[in-house]
Amino acid sequence: MRMGALVLALALVVMASAVMADPINVDSVTEVNTYTYDGAASPAQHNVNAGTVYELNLNYQTKTTAWAGIFGKISGRYVLGDATHVMKEWAVSEPDGYIAIAYTQNINWSNVSGYSDLSTLYSHIFNEVSGWNVDADQNVDKTFESTAVDCNAAYGIDLASGNTYEARVAGSYDGTATYWPTCVYHDDSNHVVYATPVGNSGATAFNGSSAQYEAIVAASESGTTVFFFKG
Image 1: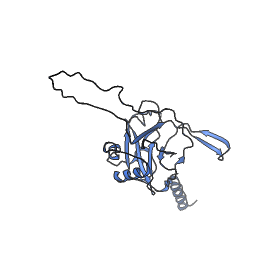
Image 2: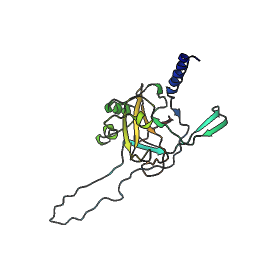
Image 3: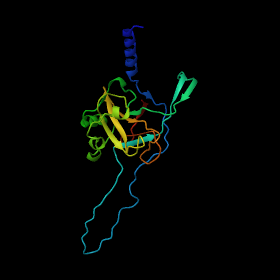
Image 4: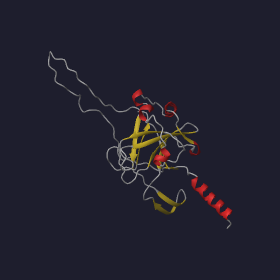
């Protein structure tokens, strides 16, 4: 083979390997547990005496009305067969990549972008989540970091080039970080796509349990359907 042809062949191999595959549909979801904050068991108390003025700082916690958390394990397999019959299958021993979550199954994966501003993210969520009621303290600018980061480079989420926003939630996706990231994107129809990296063997969820993914998504109190994809 002449040198020019060899260089061309190598270039074609590099180009082919650079093409990113679309995320695949997650086949099933199994609910294991649910967790919710119901408030303190009883109201706080303090003794007060007549004739005395008290300066008392009060603190309260209440359940969010705008966001839902999702975490758990991942299992996968390679299949030789068709949609009905399997000739041979191989288990995926160490899932990697990322999990994407959206409000529709019809995402245009070939045209996904990061958000350049959080007001656009707010409008997209408001249009997609029926009955979404968010106050100022829980809005996207308090949930997602105001500084854009490159989620692709940092976490291996191959959805779009360039920067987007992330929300950091409690836990550890790699055994050392003190958070799990939820990165947020949209397609050309303004459908919101959340993505979180698949954790390694040292990954832990917000409650200290073993996990392989963890994310937060905007949701209504009456319930919001989300779809899962493996990238």
